[in-house]
Length: 218
Image (cartoon, rainbow, N blue to C red; front, side, top):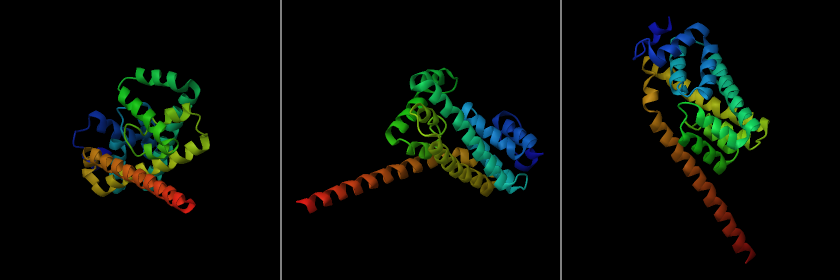
């Protein structure tokens, strides 16, 4: 039984118990199903599911490649459901529906809207790496009519990176996989800093090029 391999810190009950029971019954497909649900049911975070799956890969209970495949497929399917909702209902109606869902904060919806408005299609890729934005960013993408092909490609790439990092972290930590969830905020701050630095470098390069172009025309 998977509980014996992982010896979860909070016993067999609660969220971790539910995650392990699901994976115990469905294997790698269960990982994909849980990640799909993450997009639609906020209390099931990938920060719990994927490190646990990675630890089970370490113990030989799951296949690494199959775990990655099903986790990424679940991410994409969940994102497509929200993308379709955004495209079908439009921004305002989608926003009202999301705010009516329990456990979804208005701040999270606002942050996803602002993120997509600021970064455009790139937000779909970058947003998949940021909890609180990763699922909801699909809604404004659909409402804005982002081309489906580009949405799928960017979602797949971003999801694959996120899944690889958390599954890999769980594999490295083994029975201590739960430590990833405890330090995920630190990782988020690092990601924000890297994104901010990248944007700053991009802006500085553009300004430098314009300055050089102006000097050459003078």
